Length: 345
Image (cartoon, rainbow, N blue to C red):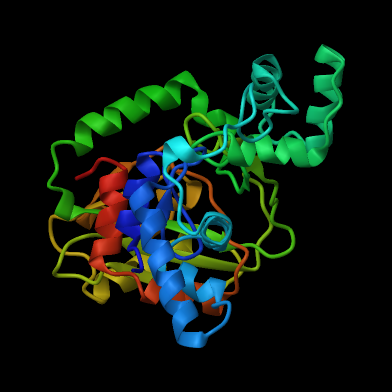
């Protein structure tokens, strides 16, 4: 049975993993006796049908288990003629069990996690070097990988982080954020629409990765400057108002200026994306303020503009064509999901 994404997320929340055939399992524990009998019955039926050793992968797919588990059942059937219950299984070795249990003790794992907190983008070689410095123990890079990927519920593999400029943490920006939250909480979410322009980055994109926090599952942000080079620019607006399309966008060459952004906004109004009484949320970029642009001033008089200072910096190493396909496929449900994620709904 193929699991839906919602089912997979539910299993993940309870600490379960999903094998390659869609079966759920808990790391460090064995499947129950009932599952062993089910696999054994399918194995025996398949062996009777083909008259020889059956296809292990086919049995694993039918029973939603791993091929390793099917081979384990096969071994018990050959040796004992039946599957064994829990109290009949051979005793395990004494001492700790599980990933890295032979290489790392609890103190070693604590040091590795502290090293992670100190620098999430640290390399495996750096973990090895500092672990030796603190404990005198030498481990391999595969041990470091196993520690982050197998010892916790959340896999701590390298991920692409969000880039957060330093100035977002200035006190004046925090005060404006509180003022914005108080203002926007009084507005009907369906009348709130968001707009911004983003650059499509190519090879110049800073693409450094960091590890996911194995305890919380959070991907730490990397602080960086917001000065990126670009080739294309997307100007887009989104909302959950059913009277409008979920996303309005335009892709063009080079960067945006105040006049160019004003033209893009006027095009969105003429297309019927905005309606009287809508609230447009933008960040405080210079081109959004418009300077002496008369077209922009006229548009601002017709619409209520709410500044937003805490906008996440993001980038995409994709072509303009790919971006167009992605944006065109977005639905109101997709945009509503973003609203819920940001607590607007």
